[in-house]
Amino acid sequence: MDWNIIEGKWKELKGRAREQWGDLTDDELEEVAGKKDRLVGKLQQKYGYASDEAHRRADEWAKQQDELDET
Image (tube, rainbow, N blue to C red):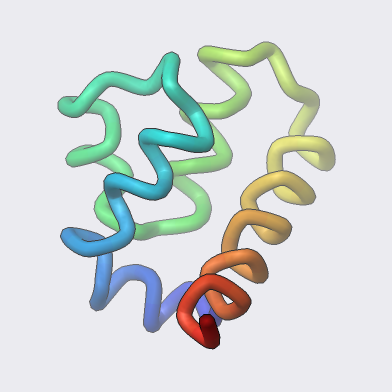
């Protein structure tokens, strides 16, 4: 799923993000607001991922949202 779409549907997708990254608080997910760069930063902070790893995981999650919407 494109990050512009994710940003627009963030209220719906926030729960899925919470399931994927349980260490992120509700407040942190509100701060992310569907923006990839903010999510990447939170993943680096909470999980200690390197920048490229955080980007990869965020993109994988975005792709999974397309697959979940197809079912």
